[in-house]
Amino acid sequence: MYIFVYNENPRNANIVDPRDYEHMQSPSRCMTSMVQIDRSGKMTKKPILENTNKKEFTYLEPEYSLPLNNTSYIIFSSDAKISKIGRLKFSE
View (cartoon, rainbow, N blue to C red):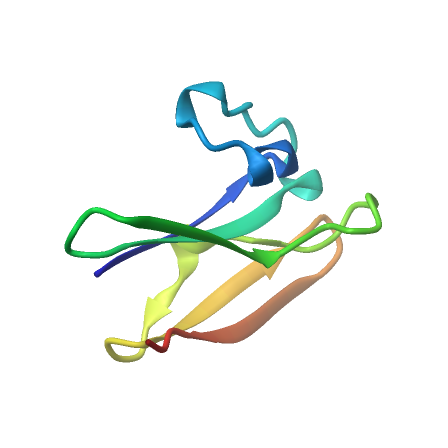
């Protein structure tokens, strides 16, 4: 199984065809998604962090994550004023 974690435009949450996706305009107004692709090629997409109040908020920076083991990562998030770290754990 392959897992991808990334920030994207919240309008893409319910779009099925990736050719119709919209570009992310601002990291502070994005949502963080996780996509799982299994051995058969089936893709499952889930939101991890959603900006439900439409205000600027801390957003995930996946490029600064550190693997702890095969199922856990230390993650970093930030905005103009606040930085946070956390643990993201994948389970089957």
